[in-house]
Length: 161
Image (cartoon, rainbow, N blue to C red; front, side, top):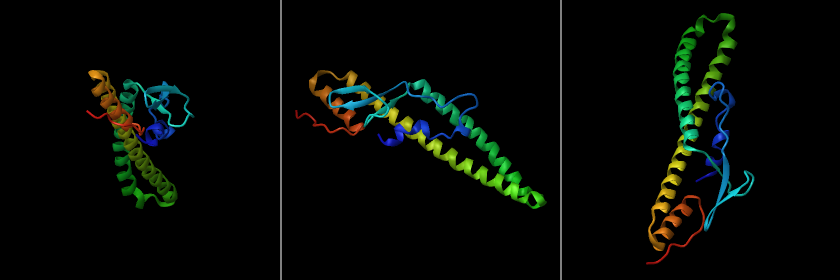
């Protein structure tokens, strides 16, 4: 996982968040260590935010809502660009509005990429934890733990059979 996972909640600009819904806060932070997970503070080195699956689903719904808004912005963009020649004295205002629409498109794309990264990272950790939980015997448990440590970038040594 990368620092993008840690900063994912900070990537959605305030004006793009769903109306009436603040950006979700993680319910805690953890740090992966060679023999498990440790609760830690947000400011600790290697701290990763913990989100529940409902929060990630909510973020995905917000992205869908933003995509619907994006479609409306694109229609408005076409109308504005078509009306540009009729704007007369409002030309500067129209150009500023078009620039803001372009900025919103860029921010929406960046937000969608960050949510996809967050979802992929969460799915990988989820699968690794399931694999560790289902492991039978010391050898398979150690292999599953090594897979989990690899996901968070911790050094480990795979057992030899």
